[in-house]
Image (cartoon, rainbow, N blue to C red; front, side, top):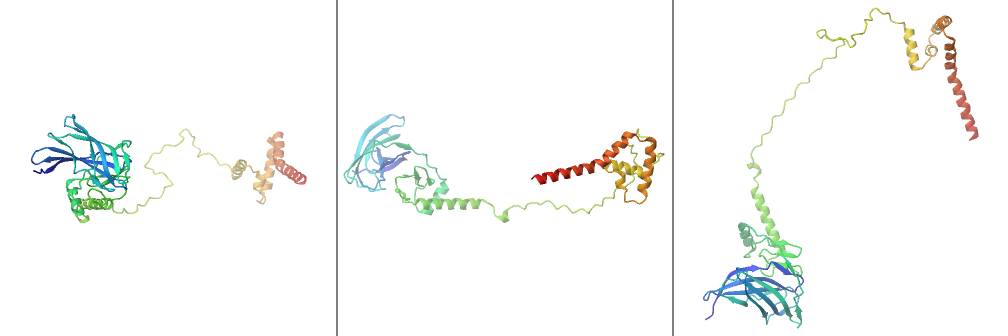
Length: 333
């Protein structure tokens, strides 16, 4: 009597064999509806351009405690698996009375349609990051939008290859954008999921008219221009301002010197002689000269007279000497 086996559990490989034309895909545990036996079935995928006619593998089954319950080899024969085709799930490699905890698989040899046998033991396994699972509501909407069942993961591109939304991994050696297991297009999946996420994000944002009214502070009224009174030349008598120099004597009874005295002081500060400053004023130069001579006859020191002559004739003499030096330099050049 024929017995039917129902899917009990399945687990995808968390690694891929870099460079190998044959990739281990997943392990499935099937339970018989009459005997209750557990059948272990393995799935592989041909990613080469040539059809595969046979495959030799070695597997190791462990129970839930990690104890090895079976270690054996199995050879798949009479195959005609083209490039991108999954095979092997119809054959049970081991039947157990107790549940199986894990299965390890090693690829040994592949037989191609051209008669060549490829040694697969030299290819190194590369561990893969676990695929990211979608939220249940988003996974359901993605399945409804694409018409595919079992889309539970985020389609993503890795350095080693890309993950489909069904969880299948496609290494870079496998060219193409179509999933060999569910038939989904990678670009279409990513675009569909992106549009769904964008629509969900837009729906979460409140509409512009639903936002609460924001209170704006009132504008401060403009104040009238305040006129500043002009500075007063005289201090306010209401303030008792102390003098800046309290020890200074009161000079209200002092007599100011005449303008000539102040002019002589200013001229001496600026380096001018009094004769030059007042030579344009008619009559005043002669009066001043008479006063100066009279004063000089009485109190002038002879040394002051000599100094005055030196100061008077030094500038023109210096100018003449500079002109002579410049002329000599010009003639010698």
